[in-house]
Amino acid sequence: MAGEVFVIGYGSSIRNDDQIGVRVVRFVGEYLKQREDPRLSDNRVILACAPQLDIGYVERIADSSCTIFVDAEESDHDDPVRVIRLDPSSPAERLSPHLSSPATLASLAQALYNRQPTFYLVAVKGFDFGMGDKISPKALDAARIAARVVIDLIDEALPT
Image (cartoon, rainbow, N blue to C red; front, side, top):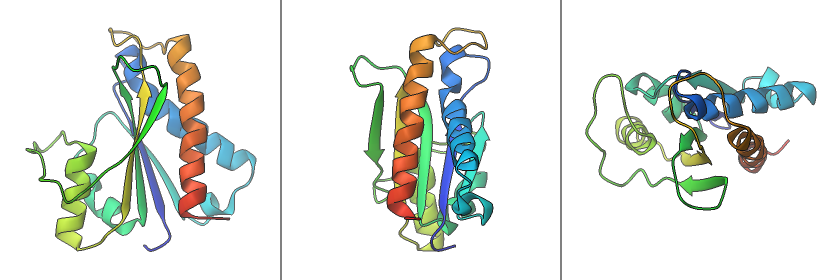
């Protein structure tokens, strides 16, 4: 659908900070509901959470004018959040039926449906990827920053 933004946060709920992507999408949903944003209620902003990406999302991605992937990353850089615009014209990575990267899904959506949506990866710095279900305080702070970044991307793609 033209004029639709699809936001998907993903990560494992049993690897502490790996679940940041899911938490960011929940923060975004809470914020949009609080401000009674009509883009949420009329389905122009679609929010989704998943333990991992898979090719089942390709049609939804192709139907959107903008897709925002949100994931945790292990990194040495100082920035708590990085926004990366994905180029779907890059060669697609190898696929398995249950695990794909944002770049792979963007490439498939473009190739299969011949559409040119915009794709972003919002990479949120994580600190503890050990087994467990707790997000570290530093990662939670980064998730809050990332939620604001995602909302800004939504506002840019779909002005109110």
